[in-house]
Length: 228
Image 1 (cartoon, one colour):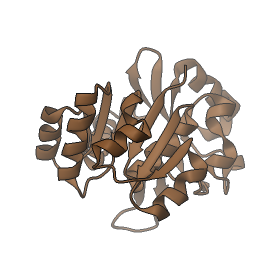
Image 2 (cartoon, rainbow, N blue to C red):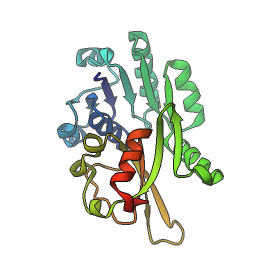
Image 3 (cartoon, rainbow, N blue to C red):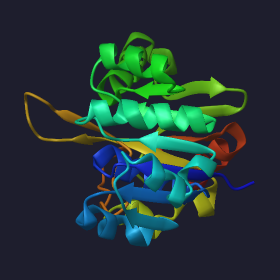
Image 4 (cartoon, helix red, strand yellow):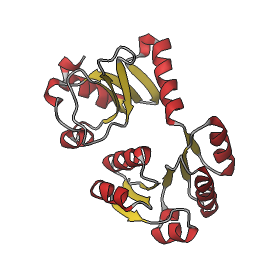
């Protein structure tokens, strides 16, 4: 079954969400008022449009109200995000995910109608803290029945190749959702990157966060025994 998602706002978070959803097999409509951002993503999603997403009429004309879910990535314009969320809730959109910048905004946007408030820094910190506090499960994080995230070292044959070139989802049935990379800096020896850009080459020494069903993850690790 193919899902349809609309991503409103194509900053870093919105761009990465749109590309990942498309790579995962969804039909993705990406929308922003900035024409340059729309052109940048146009080759990576089903459809990219330049429009004023604060306009209820524009959202309706674009077919946003018929999407299975909508991601609102406009953290610098919380007032507009609130308005959009209200429109989408009234239109009956089943899933409304909104990027926010504070816990206060998260609480407010949920009251308005968002099904999930996304605070990237908080969510990443929670995940990493859990790994640090429970090192025995650092290499495998269960997300539900038969689904997990594992950490694997970047296979040697993947070095200097991009995720677009590797097409991991199609070839292995798993998703690369993040990576840890050494920086060479004393103050911050390791940098964590959520949803790495698909055009960014991987490097030897990268630690990849791989999401998938348990059977697929086992097969993935067997395919790359040197990635332990």
